[in-house]
Length: 386
Image (cartoon, rainbow, N blue to C red; front, side, top):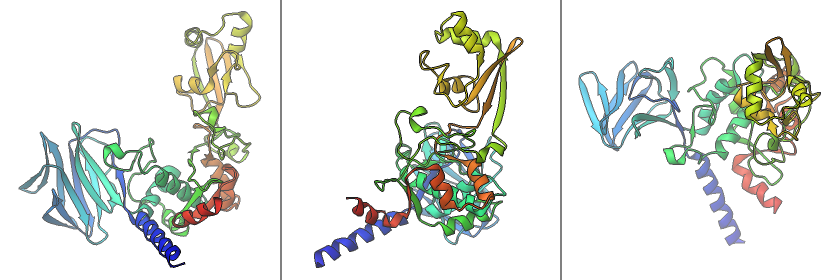
């Protein structure tokens, strides 16, 4: 019994340690710059150059970080200090700072936590190091927008947390966990315009979504499904038991439900020829007047093997749910939805929250046979499965 209790205690300590570890977010992903101006808005920070304390910065002061040649550099006024490997900005009292990379239209994003400046091939790499729960409100605001109900923000908090925890190694080779762009989750620093994002994070603290095996789900979401979500295998390479297509009437009254795009008929016919689409009169007639009654995986059907998701990508359509109309010298795609259509439909979820559904109801509506559990107790539920 003592041995069992000892093992139990060690597991608890290990889980608490994992939960307390900071999240490393690579900032300004995919954008190249060599200099960035940082202004301390609140509090103070200690600056370490190659792990040695260099200077303290107080509220209202600005300085510059740069990477030139083979060295990192901190410039404050007339003083400059060089580093070989890393410059760390360590917050001593809940500091907040604005970062403006040179040449980028980032509008001086506001951050909290710590910042690491490291060298990347030909550019400066900034990494925001902060607690997971401090990161979530910024993701909610960037991904979910403003002026929504608290229950919707709770949904976004839970799926954003689940995504972050299940993707901690996605950018391991780059020296951080996740990036701040759509490649991972959009994060523009602190939530600044929607205080409910902080409340939603607090009231769902540590809650994640798991499947029937108590494994963290791939918390896929998109803007608008157009009336029916997609099976995961219809968009990606393999099925996910919890991402199964289902009707969704909630999103049909929302802003991104419908769209249109026109292209020259000649461009469309040249595209079909390149894809080796049959040139028979019947086939071409179907290609110029494609009116499916429901979402289709292939255009016109599986015989011709042109996935609708490929057409969406090639013509930069908002979704793969569309009809094709020939209108004079043009082809017009008339479509529904915005995004890949797998998992949670954001605008459907927003509408459900407006109608009074709880965040639990909304999550269970879009993800099949899942559970909401505290991350720190996942091991306990996992033991029950086996």
